[in-house]
Length: 185
Image 1 (cartoon, helix red, strand yellow):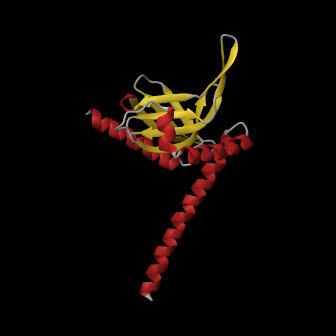
Image 2 (cartoon, one colour):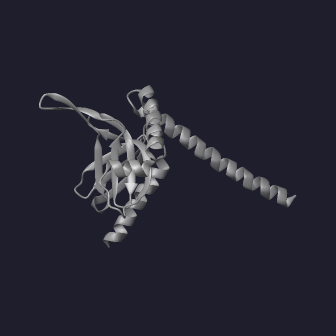
Image 3 (cartoon, one colour):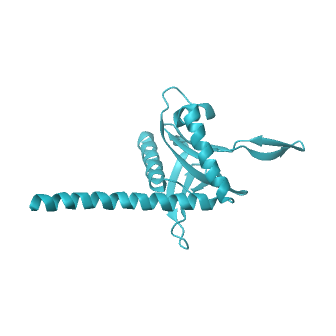
């Protein structure tokens, strides 16, 4: 009887943990899709990004093709999210490597140059030694809206939001900051 009770207790705990993860994922996915000006565009963007990752051989290869890297630099993780800009949220991928935080938009964005429309990917790169702070936060009005503020040593602020894996991103960015702080001591 004790053995059965213990087994059911462990199983119940695992089911509870799995349920919490599923709830978090569904909430994060819903928030991610709502962050975009177009729900449909966001959903299609995620599908296109997944297809690109499969076709090009994974996030590591895309990261190395998109950003300048050194041979010993290792990609730690990548996170689908939005970068808040003055023109509105930009959907893309935030990469965390052993040397930098790097964001690249999923699609090129238009801009004017010499009176002509040009297109370019929106990129932000912060070397880890230039990282000053990582501040996860939640909206007081809507608890589903979660943000991560990243501050560089020259006090530039970058706000990331709409993460599909918010908790993982917050933890990974905190660890990157702690690793950088330990190396600079």
